[in-house]
Image (cartoon, rainbow, N blue to C red):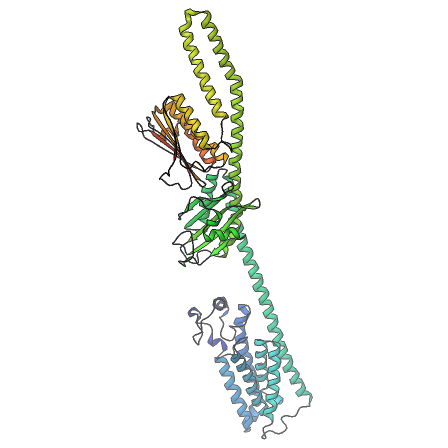
Length: 607
């Protein structure tokens, strides 16, 4: 026997319907889900039911249709054998229409007006045939009832009631054919019972449909909530793993390095840029520029358009139009981007931009991940910056305390020894030569102590930037060490925050001390260059040089301490030295032009 399952959705992989109409994604997924239950066909493609129910609808309708026809054939056989023309015609109509609907089923719940007209047409055709063969008393009355039930199940209460009315009217019209007498009369209890049964069947089908649709809506909603919770749990796990890693970095350099690694692992971005806000200069300074080229500094009105948009938006900004050559982006090869503002303590402290050459590389899930990651990253960067400031403040306080202790204890003792040596030399000329040499050593020690105290107490202030303190320091160095030295300022009008310049001053002091003690140099040049929030301090000498690796390994020349200070301010320390060819120490942050602009030079000659 043919069933409506005959036209099962066996061509799902082609994603096309019989007429060449392409299937949507939801329909394809529903068809695949229904395969385990036997698949689905055109009859149930448009109705939103669970896959198991949807797969059983067509077989159930086919069974009901053929059951009604079989029932009618059994009861109408005697009339047909007696030569009843009306009965034979009704049998032919019912068999043909049932066979046709088994091969080409009615598309339930279809939004196409033609599909609804076809369903109503079945009711009308069967109604006329049944009315011609005896009306409500015809043994084929259940074929009309099943057609009404199909309409009610497919389109609901209103459509079912319309089908019921159309069926009754069509049966009444069929009963008006002159060859049947008395067929249109109603009145006995059996006729009323059949009519009520038809009404009850239509209402029941519509109610079952409504119930099934409501259950499917709840199931879909619950599945969506479960999926959302599962995704949220995954995102929280990812953010939690990042949050456990980033805050362990207390220096800005470590924080930025860790952030770059986490971002690369999480988003697979080809371009990563991170700008932090310099509150004093009111400029955005690039701290990470992987895969792109940025200016040394940006004013807010000069930011690239995607970053400017992110600064004005509270949520991450997803861009999928970067392949347009007229759209500004961080890298010319990028097609999609994700940008976010880093905010803490009520204000922005940075901007993060991610880009990728693929057009749809980032999606809404990445937006949610970056939204959580941005809070952790902002807090980490802010903590690292405050840790550096507190460390600098604590170091300065400790330097003042050490200077005070050295002055009160060691300085006074050396001064007392010097006075006593002078007294002994004056009273005992016989040992004056040895005592005079000892007295000179004590005076040298006092001079070194005074210079040490001066360095400990000296520092950059708001009124005395490094461009002013540096030349004074180099001048004293030249006088003390008898080495020709010069201090070059590239941009005298530019400066950095006081804590940053203080750390650079300590690095400069240590570098000059190393030159005086170990290099044997005859000439030293110091170059100080500030361009926006980017800077470079260079100390070069023509001394004997050393092996850099060994110097760092043995902690010689104070290189370890210099690196630690550079890390505090987020700078990089580079040391170039070759035995016999001098040494160059560079402390750099940001992107500096190798060519120096016209500069101010303060030479300090040999004294």
